[in-house]
Length: 399
Image (tube, rainbow, N blue to C red; front, side, top):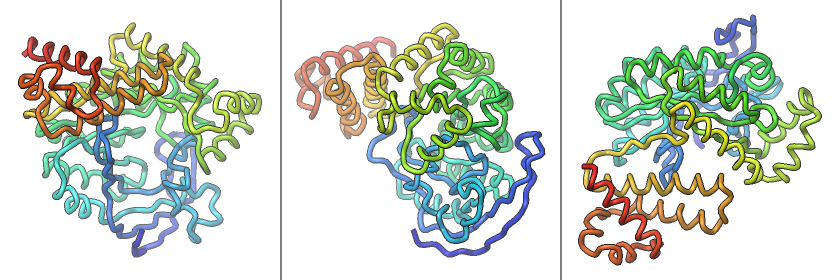
């Protein structure tokens, strides 16, 4: 990335996110980025976003498990100016001062779809870039998903409501434990308390904004016991959350090294157990996470919330395509936690991509050629054609 350093300022900021007297050196490095948008080849089958854009690199919260610690996401923290800091990821924050300017220029060339934006870490209180980016999304009518730990997002509730009225908005809360005590000290040392996140969720819900919990990462042997799984789902329901997405911990590069060091320090007896369920892989073994996912699903059913995030679908001739694709994506998840064979899962996932990206109305294809007409679509076989036909019939019957 080409960029110009404008200012380098080393300042001490009181950590207002938790009342623990923390006083840490934070180096903010404003610069002009060359681009800001991430455009994905396929829509994300969990969060339904096609785009993402973030104004900061690095994070003051310093969560020990964060995948952004991996070198492929945070190479800037290895710069010369970051050396000598205890934790460059949380103490060396790159600030894209032209974030809103870039977003306006790049969104202007893109079709409307869900974009993940915002970052309400303490830097946002100082630079207000997430708010400026929300204003751009409102201007262009883009639907917005915000994934947060910080109640600071409530500052921008006025804008979020306007976005929701014009297109769609959702605030997703990252929560992996029922309370802050103990867990947060070791794994989320500078983040807002879990209790404050649930409280903010309730305020968001009361304003009519879709909200829920990104129950991730569920740390093996630390967050995966039934009492915690049920409590997180129950608290989500109590605070107006409509869904809970269960996700496992990934392990890669510098992030895996950092997290393992944290385990050795606080839970040394778990290190060998992690080796057994990860086997040096990126994700935990399927049978492990399948068990967790199914238990979360059961608790969601008990408390009347969904275990998948409802998809925003823009009205129009391709709306049926998006709805069918949503159902196929969700089916891949259920197949995964049920232990289906990998090739079968990929059949559904690829079919979901094909249907989602089809530029012709699926209903029109079906009306023209019936089940056999659906089979001419690449990757759609006999059984899937029958399933899709049934879904289309059901959609028509409820109109």
